Length: 454
Ligand SMILES: Cc1cc2nc3c(=O)[nH]c(=O)nc-3n(C[C@H](O)[C@H](O)[C@H](O)COP(=O)(O)OP(=O)(O)OC[C@H]3O[C@@H](n4cnc5c(N)ncnc54)[C@H](O)[C@@H]3O)c2cc1C
Image 1: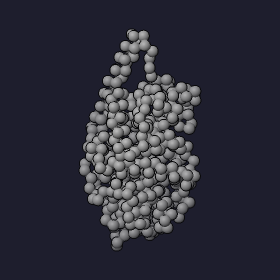
Image 2: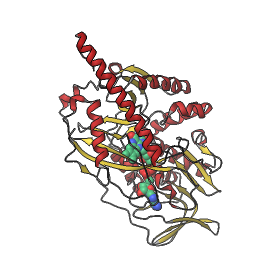
Image 3: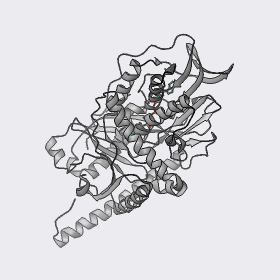
Image 4: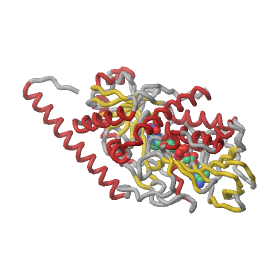
């Protein structure tokens, strides 16, 4: 795959930054609730609070949608992410409630698109846990059983049955969710927020969150916000202040790349009739999805740990773009001559439980991390549930399942640079073994005069 002329984006490949930035905060002010961070999570909290008549202020360091929300792969998940077999071992009793949460999160995205009339190319295709080896196929079958027992709507099938490219052996489709342009979705929500009664300040980096005189004091370079309640919704950037619970999450940098536009006939020849987004079953997934501009967006495969706050702005690493290109050529051999047009990345937050979580510090500060690579659906849902908690004083059952009674979090396992490198190496070793097996099978088919399969 040609990666010689890649445009390394500082923001996102999906959309340009908005031109109509809201003003920065330049004086002190007071409000009932302050929301810090204007990703899908924070924006949904602020929108819902404004809808419910609360005096709400939202502050974002850059602009609403600057973070992962506009940069992701646009795969709206209807099921849990992470290692579902491990999650089932650790949280078996919670699995039905988590299934309910994830499916409702996907439906919430669809409701938001309709409610705010957001043009984001949403296609309710579901997403497929796609297997690239027999080992992954076995894993998918076990995962499907667990999810079905929990009540998640999934179906197993071969690549033909699922309408996915023949380079994959088959897999499991989540029936809820689909694919979209996440940049357009996020900026659509931003537009709705700016038209609401919420007061929004962009280019306003919060430098500290403290308490004084019975209020939460949010410090920014040119003004202070005093609020009765505050919501921390800065996702991977959450660890910047002393008030954040230690080890709430680990910041991880991941990337996506996009091919040049591909001839529709060549795309049709792939057999990707369902257009479902794909995630492989490696320990660190690869994801692939079609777009409305006849390109394929794909990414991840390697996780890079952020080592200090504030998290720096970054561009995609050309070596990883190259590696992703090689993986693409392996999964889509018929398209191995296609070039990569652009690459970008973003910071996500991984929790030690690999589950989204939410909680409270004292009576007046709320926090949530709804990510682990699945926040496109989960972050806006958790955001609105947080707003309802603040207004009603009661936790919805879907927030209850994420709730941490105490803000204490164990040290995350395998999330250091060495651990992440080891996980990556295990995936590559398995790819190598599977590649040799595939070649051996092809060789023996040739010897026996059998036509080659996909
Ligand atoms: C490359 C990539 C691919 C992904 N693919 C998918 C996918 O296909 N499906 C899926 O479900 N999820 C995916 N995700 C994850 C998903 O994008 C996130 O879980 C989700 O967007 C998190 O939303 P958020 O609102 O919590 O955080 P963010 O969108 O990161 O928002 C945080 C906001 O906080 C602001 N902020 C930070 N620090 C401060 C400060 N000090 N003061 C004020 N504001 C501050 C930032 O500017 C930002 O706007 C992906 C993420 C990435 C990066």
